[in-house]
Length: 473
Image (cartoon, rainbow, N blue to C red; front, side):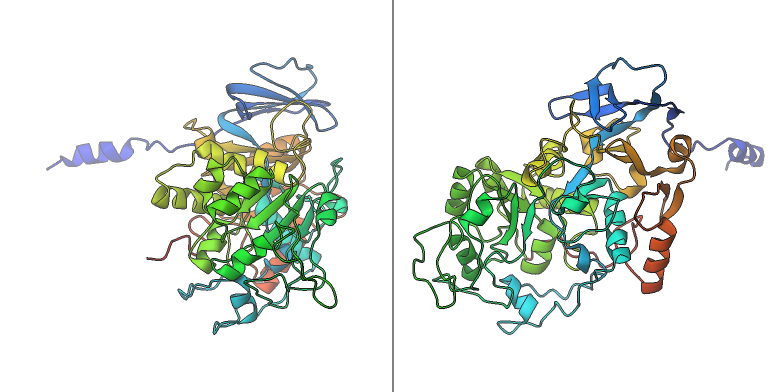
């Protein structure tokens, strides 16, 4: 038995509590210097420095950057700096619909659940919400997870770069990407297996060639009807018989600016063709597994050198942000691929590769001289670098910048850099959002979300009713 006096002595000993990684902030003018572990594409600087010019471009990436004495300095020795995440596949106007409990039902083609075909119930019994406050809340959910850009069919003012809208580029000097959900003009639920008799206005080679980036849903499903979609968009000889009213013939628009979203049904031979044409793929494993019980043969695509980006799809069947999509990719990689994908490969899927897929690689996606300073700083007290970034949560986020401008971050950092920013409700974190001209305030977004019961910005554990990331037995 421990003597009573010893017990009291033990109780009086201070218990060590892990403190939040601290940053030293010196507010200046003009340039901004960030010192942390730097994740560049070709190296990791531990520690390193990034100098941002007054216009929001990266001016130096090195172990030590010559810096004017008047510059703002952000020194975070227990943090890792990554390019801002880029979400290349989402549907913002459906993200006010929360996920429902998993029924265990799986489908062979997207039109089965969209239109209630082949004896399946119609799951898409909800309507899009294009209220700017709803869209802004969804973008804020991405932002607090470290995303700075998205391709998401709709847009809200401010917050993220919306790479498929000129008005949403936030001064980025690129051509907006083209986002096409039904490139076969088959929204009515048309499914074919031996010809291309879909809608009358399918995407053509000329249309795709005129774009800087063309992201389109192709082969979303696991049956022959899903694969037929690929045949009708990668060949000029598969179907040469027009149908009355237009369309009906196969088109070949596989080219470097083309990115296939989902591509679940593609065979090794199909992937050979994708690789030969230097086209890309956007992978959304959570939505694929929760709807179809199967996803892209990611290792076969990687083996062929195909550029792969990651996308969250949408809230009803996908992930609430890229953090949770990365969590799904990590789980699938460990449980079914024997950890064949490295942390760095997964990280590139939401940074460098994603910028390439969206046609924005000249401006964003890397921490490199001349690129825009779209950056996210994550707490990394154990100095795990990229391992930490692909497992990060909103609670790990310390600072997010778009073009060198502070958007969101921990209150102690944001207050030192830009006073008068607004607190936002993120469980387990004390974050603030800095205002931008033309967009809703944090208070307006929060009030809207609360009044309509919208899905929260973040969770401290697994999100409520998060769609499955498991392969059925």
